[in-house]
Length: 330
Length: 157
Ligand SMILES: Cc1cc2nc3c(=O)[nH]c(=O)nc-3n(C[C@H](O)[C@H](O)[C@H](O)COP(=O)(O)OP(=O)(O)OC[C@H]3O[C@@H](n4cnc5c(N)ncnc54)[C@H](O)[C@@H]3O)c2cc1C
Ligand code: SF4
Ligand code: FES
Ligand code: FES
Image 1 (cartoon, chains in turn yellow, blue):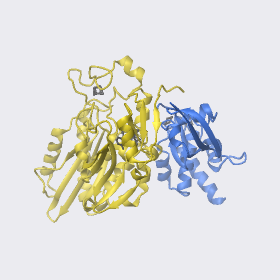
Image 2 (tube, rainbow over the protein chains, first blue to last red; image 1 turned 60 degrees about the horizontal axis):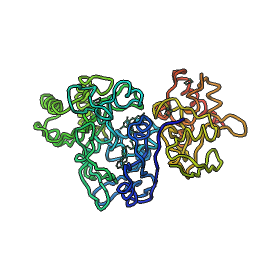
Image 3 (tube, rainbow over the protein chains, first blue to last red; image 1 turned 120 degrees about the vertical axis):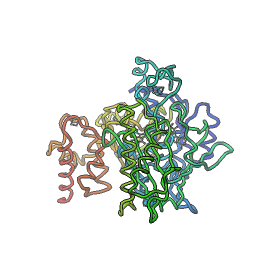
Image 4 (cartoon, rainbow over the protein chains, first blue to last red; image 1 turned 90 degrees about the vertical axis):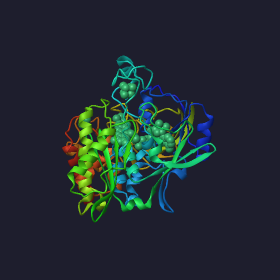
């Protein structure tokens, strides 16, 4: 079949070579499992001349304890992470990974690719002829947004399942480029703009992810709302991590995916610490989150429903995690 | 851009000059004539194109052929032994796990990948392993029963 795709695919064996090719080959993009990229390229969403694969970089395909952190290589396939016993202390992460797509996709899909996946919209994730006949949109090739036609903004939603789990666990990511190598908080690589939600610059590579081992002392979980039980992106996804003391919840972090162009982390709640049974405080948390999320008509269920689901999933997680058996999530 | 790739498909070593952008499903069907592997959607949604790469289930429609250079690929054509149906193939036939047959190669390869990892899976584990494979005909019950029947055959063998 003629897919119309045409590019050079390289698979260097080291981080240095990957970033060298990204820097020196015009228009080069990172290629990991390809489960987000290939369907998009088949729909002529992007026409990069060069793809640089991370699959040959052994250093990006391991899970190791290093000092106070668990370090996960960005090129680790999700299916292999589910089989690793090293993630046992982080139920939210395991639950989120298990919810990504279906088993065949998880064999190829990597954790780094999941964090860097493109934003999604009903008017964007369509074939080229569909988009052409409907009229291209702001995000690619066009000049109006079909979701909010009067605005200048793209609301395509970030729909990765794994980012919210890593956000509540306090994860950081290692970003490498030619002559640069640094750790930054995962939260700092995203922006709420459907057209450019990733703050990584061309030439930058997400090398690995690290989670503080102390995060294993938090109870955590992830739940997602979707139409089909499998192979479906979140209409809304919520991760919660919390700590308990004898008065109730002493620390609380909540992260939301599927509603905005970036995953959102909430951690400074005015009502925390709170007693577990304090319904008023829980409602205040719903309101604080409700003010920031902005689900638009980018998918097949309306924003109002997805907004309600964020509150429902958040409550369900908090109830499950504060129950006496909540240690292992819900 | 084109490259020469080497890989093993159904036990045979293959060396081919292919475009870097060629999909594995197209390589299998168009280059090697292995049309048992089906294409049912435009990318990752249906599971009809499921094959095994190094023994694990992969979707050949979102896999670039060049990215599996050096690896081992198995398709539905390799599952029979000496002209006899494998236990999964026989069970799908006997228990009516196949109707129009379009999803069947993908279903069997996904089930094969499960049984290699876990020879005695529970019903929930079978459902989970096949959850990326769509079928428009059977309603899935017969498919799950077929996999269960194959497991029983394996235990008796
Ligand atoms: C049918 C279908 C259903 C899906 N369902 C879900 C779902 O339920 N939940 C979900 O979260 N995802 C889902 N996905 C999306 C996708 O499978 C996952 O996000 C996957 O984890 C992407 O990883 P990858 O390695 O395949 O990424 P790739 O496709 O290789 O890359 C994705 C993007 O990230 C960039 N990139 C990749 N690796 C790096 C890196 N190391 N550094 C910098 N940039 C990088 C690439 O340039 C590209 O832009 C689905 C996809 C399909 C086709
Ligand atoms: S939100 Fe608007 S601009 Fe963005 S992808 Fe959808 S239709 Fe296009
Ligand atoms: S053809 Fe590959 S998943 Fe549908
Ligand atoms: S038997 Fe027809 S699609 Fe499954």
